[in-house]
Image (cartoon, rainbow over all chains, first blue to last red; front, side, top):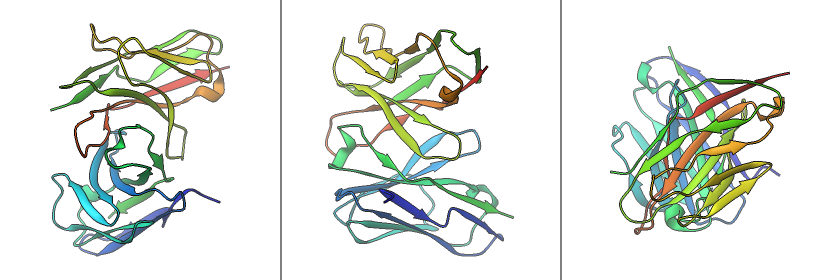
Length: 115
Length: 113
């Protein structure tokens, strides 16, 4: 069983479209995250949720809207896609808020290509 | 704010060579330090960690020592294998309230037979 699973793994779409990426974790963790990895492999936190509540919201365009229907799921919806949104998006989870244990469990990533 | 600086890659080595990937950090307080590894096509995995000064983290032959005086956490391995080819990320986590990992830009390691 995959611990942190994301769908879809690949997503190719046109500028201006709206798309969603789903994430589910079966580890029983309370905290989930979205990270963006650009073409140079740089990873940056976008959002973090603890028990369905938003706790971290970095400087991300409001075209990006996370939704956490329950603590095992954190979805990412992106409106009006732009070329610069092309990246690999990683979902992650951790057993306690704040990531102080340092062990984040990552999904395999969702590669978004905007044409 | 907090930041992590890693050496630029790619680092290209022959099998059984000695590996060092440099990492330095800037943080207020007393962060915990981590190395994560990303194999091709996969998500990141925790490789090792150290939570206080002079701690040494180790795993799979890799080691890193938390050096507060030089604000460094260099990754080393005595003899690399082809299967170690991956991207390595240094990261820190501060201990204040809700926080999350700050990653370095990653260093690609390529090991040839």
